[in-house]
Length: 280
Image (cartoon, rainbow, N blue to C red; front, top):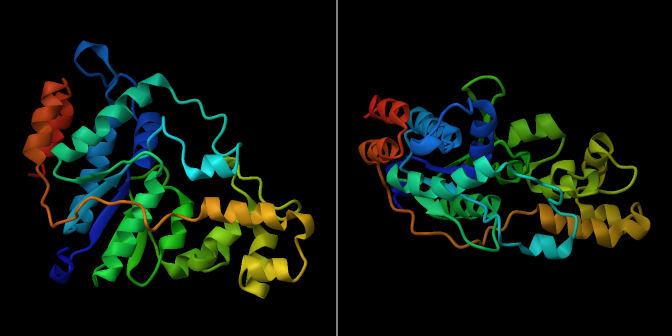
């Protein structure tokens, strides 16, 4: 997979960037005919900045499939329930994989899997090939991927900067190791995904329990979760990214800014086209 070249694979959470762009850029950014364009423009330019900052051997952009449930939904009826996406971002989410392909990036999207799963599979595959991986996402669940060979790049609110999150930073922020992150999420819960967590256990107590016992299984064995044990094990499975998610081939690939700029112009996003070409 080109790992010997010494350049990392950049794996991007497309949905995470799309929501960040949609809510952070003016709605006045429009395509021909008045269709929305702010998420398209924002994702392309954020991805371009990330590429320029990291010079990866290739880029993979991972996507959710909104109309296809995953095993997580079967395990927990409330999982991600109540989410109501603006039709304008949904329309752009349908177009974004095409734009990413025009940028020369690999694309992963498959019913039954979330973007997170493809990020995990990409990091695992790259590490197995002897390479390194950079994972760009604002989803802290991805902290479970941090290792000596995989670094999470987290957008810093209000800036264009990317914080680099490795095992040391995960420990500093959460008080647990990357391997303990799914256990930690299961214990403390995740309101954004409607994962309840264990009753009476928040972030601090969850971290303290894992520091003392090491794993969720050991916490359960110590009798500390009572009749919640089975439910919390389900929450852990939900919070664990699937490293076996199906991936496309990931050969080395340079960006094709000109091709993406042409697509931008065809959509009426001339400003995007100009900015893409400024780096080519």
